[in-house]
Image 1 (cartoon, rainbow, N blue to C red):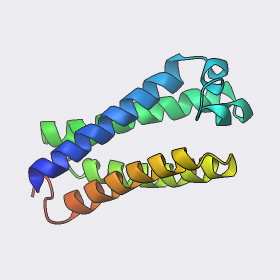
Image 2: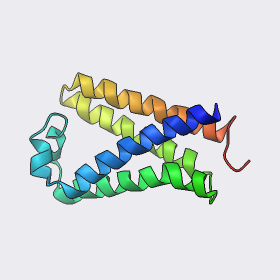
Image 3: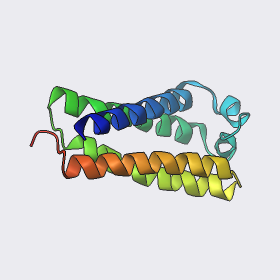
Length: 127
């Protein structure tokens, strides 16, 4: 179970890092031109960039506390925060009629829920 949680955490951290780097360093006009990025047309550049920075921090928060054994409770806390973020993303993509992205984002939500459950419960880090 511990290995499965680490694999899930690594996958989710990779997704968060990729999404965060994209939103932080690519102009929002370029993001808006691609499928799934249309929502950025209605958002300010500062909001998109801030969301990107938060996603990069989430990637770090999913991995570093567990690896370094410094405040390991931050791993499931970060995963729980990711659940909230994915609910917002599902609502946003749903309003735009992007069913494939709602399903994909739902998958990330399930992964984050699994991590939060596992790390708060049966496989808590630092316990």
